[in-house]
Length: 142
Image 1 (cartoon, rainbow, N blue to C red):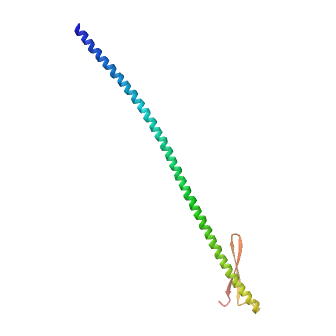
Image 2: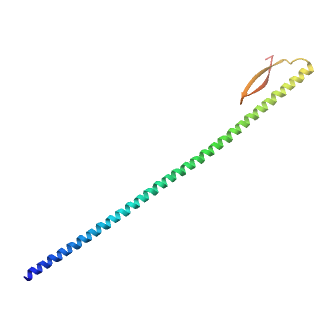
Image 3: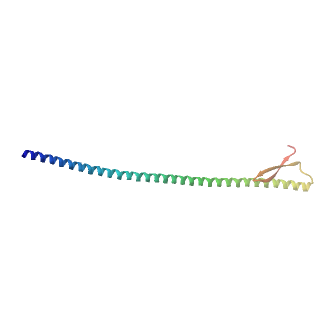
């Protein structure tokens, strides 16, 4: 009978150890589930921060591209206005040259009473819907 009680005590100890082991295993599984959930939340937070960061970077890139395009547009406008000013200056000089030549010919006509041995050719230039007349003297002997 002593042996039976001793065998039953060993089985009871084994059963007790098995229950402790199962209890610790259950606790560890629960801890693992909590850890997984925590890490998934961190991953989702990181992903959302990354997406926001990426969209912010895209917004910054778009912003810098817009600034660059605006700068290019300003440079183009400045160059265009400078070109137009140069063209107007050239046209003004040309007009003054032709006016001077015309006045000289007119003075010669007033003094001599005859048109010099040249004739006038009228060439019409259209610029900005305005008509400019330039007078070219062409020597009749050539």
